[in-house]
Length: 127
Image 1 (cartoon, rainbow, N blue to C red):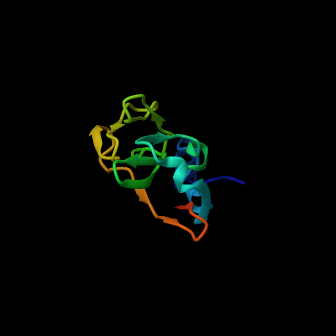
Image 2: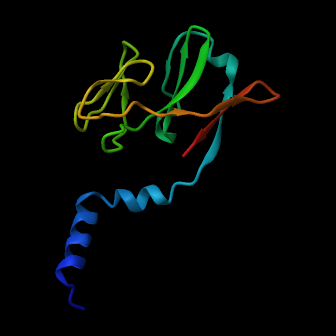
């Protein structure tokens, strides 16, 4: 089979980008039980669910979840000791609330939907 120029370019761009657009389409919304909300009583960033796509953050009386993926190119973020987030791929940084402090990222980290169920467990909705 011979590809025309357009087909070749689309294939090349898709491979060069790691087929990220194809991968993103396969992610279905799901709810993850992050355990008892009481486990997050102390201010800080909890990294236990980083590989599932989110950080749990306690800041004063607020308990929330932030996406663990950089908004620039979806690289997995690292949580720093000063409670900020760093993208090892291109150097973007985010403060403890997920706001961009250094680009190339231009968008803040998404705050994910959370609820506490009848048993006191924190449920996080991940895309």
